[in-house]
Length: 135
View 1 (cartoon, one colour):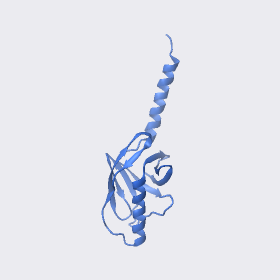
View 2 (cartoon, rainbow, N blue to C red; view 1 turned 135 degrees about the horizontal axis):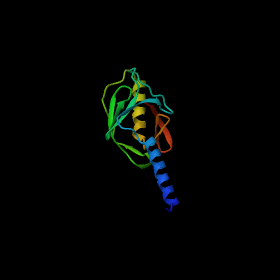
View 3 (tube, rainbow, N blue to C red; view 1 turned 90 degrees about the vertical axis):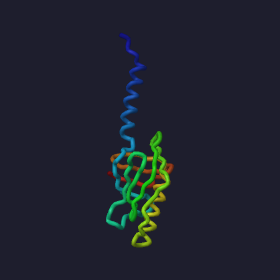
View 4 (cartoon, rainbow, N blue to C red; view 1 turned 180 degrees about the vertical axis):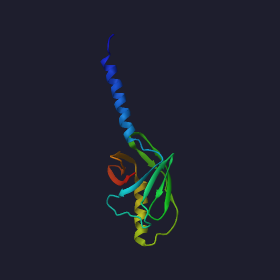
């Protein structure tokens, strides 16, 4: 029986590609808690962490004073497109919290790709890391 080395290498490469993809796919119906907003302080005044959950074709979460939701789509090479973000309209208790919530939502609207490394979801605008989350 003649062994085709090129064919075996192709099969091995296909298995390797599949294993890499499994580690980088954005998991659906999983909640993530904000751990870093990179450059600006973003906190919650409601003693509830800022969060994001990806489900189906919609994401949702808590932005500090309000809940939010948006459509999203994941593409090749860990790209993501987030649609217009809608949120409840509760007023934060102080102006600083309003500014911080607005900053978080502004950053979220700029996201165009993601990486998952060591249990951490990292959201980027271009090559700039904007938000980091942990499960």
